[in-house]
Length: 487
Image (tube, rainbow, N blue to C red; front, side, top):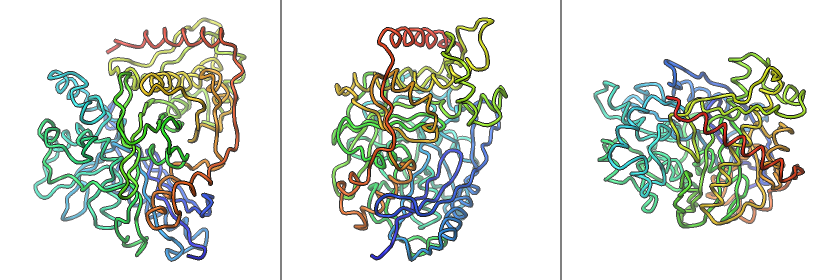
């Protein structure tokens, strides 16, 4: 194969990237482009699917050109994507019939209540691993079908499907993305008739479900002739990029939100503590593997809020210095339940609060409380995960944009009381998609090749005494309770 590489399209909530990796998992080329966040009403979040497609094509061209590569240098390409974000398009024209409804969009909240009346919030959990929430695709798709007047042949998909349609002409999604729609049966790995009936979704609009790692087809256009052979939802891709292949291995991605996944093996583990049961991956013909997941809605988005809404920092990178201008949180706690609380609480009635304010509190305390909130929310998810799986977490592998924040990582290790470990390659989401694609075409021979690529760049170890940890945790829990029952 000579010096060929594997590429990854990483289509995220705020930007699209294309990264090219070598056999050791090192980056040899990359390009990134942001796209607009559209807020038509409070709680509504949309993306323009055409703008996303344009940005993906642009970053592919830019990355290849910047490294003097051509498509002939690529052995395969994988796709990883923001999950749950819902697109509906016309099969004849390939044009979206409405903006994409983003995973953060809460317009279907009234439908959650309506669907929960018959069987409660967990009525579909046994089949899907998911509670009823505005987060997942099924209700978003139902809303689009109710509000779009389009005659003709409609196709639904998450962003991976939208990109695959335009890059290969195929209407497919992989098992990890399908497991986030609330329409797939976790055991059969197929669309479930009882779920389609309950949500009123016609089977004709749905993509075909395929493995995460398999040769799906040759690309057209900007990647002409290259095999697209990997598709993974972004958090499952990061789990793979972090080489978490054994039960009990876990990673946390600190992005717009926080997403903590723990590998649980070849059987789905039901959650009794508010976590999601999800597919981790399906590599070719091998059995699917599963994971427990806890999602925190506001992580990096909270820093953006301090910048854009409060104006206490000018750039996101200033938050750490501001937070370190004070020796501790001054007993200030920030619960960022801007669109309710996600795992393990699942309380749509919660709203954001800053608690414990006195005349002494400063912008520094608020910045520190915001960063600490990310670590506290992660701690709640870890504790729930340990209870569900019966496996104590020995260390936490971390990735995402916020891990450059030393104060946050130190505090995370302290509050969890376990080492927090950052790998050499930070782009674990894109790397996971590249791994899935490369495995399918024999670029890597198996999981041992991928394990060998993973190495540690930095480790934070806990130094906080138990009494202080306990006191902080109790105050945090008190603040969380105050945020509930607001709406």
